[in-house]
Image 1: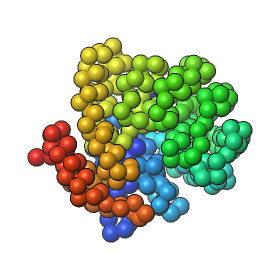
Image 2: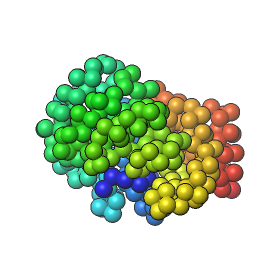
Image 3: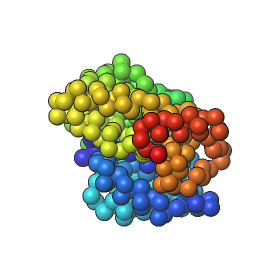
Image 4: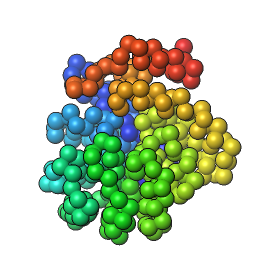
Length: 291
């Protein structure tokens, strides 16, 4: 169920509130362009600044808009285990197909603490869980041995790995059995990750170029390595542009320039600088996403 190109979808705002119409339109845009799954309320969705009510509403809107045409994997992680359980229960009740759970951040748990955290949530809520490891954001790296322990729990079905290390990714795949799915958390190394056994990506750049990211994964899976390589290199400038500043600042600016969302982001993130906006505009024009 969880393979291919899944988009870490942005949360559109209008006048400080969730822009439901824009969110629904984005989901239609992704379905029309071959995206394989929607992931609301992740880092790219600004989950850190959503209230609990807003977090739940974004998930509900996404599930309703997707209408089971493609899977919805709801972000439900927290640095509080009890809060993660509550968010995960809501996602299940709302009809999510799975959840994405980031490693607890700031409090820097040990490897045993990470294991016990995810084990506790998995025992409380019977829903497919994808782990999310992004040490540059959280301050803690979940090691391959810990992932392997967790992979033995029936409803822990995969991991979004964003440590940026092919060595670590290879170790995870080597230690886990074939039922466990590894998805890239870094757009710039999707193709290398597929080549060592990854099954897809939870993508930022797919917000603006969903067709190309989806086709990259499909081309690789169909054995068309030449086409996959072409798309890998085509996407490179766009991938770089998405990280001119902290994600999701550039991707939200790109979508605003493309007239898909309002140009709004929540503090403490601020709008893309004028210099980087012009750089981004140039990349989008070269990519033919803007006139």
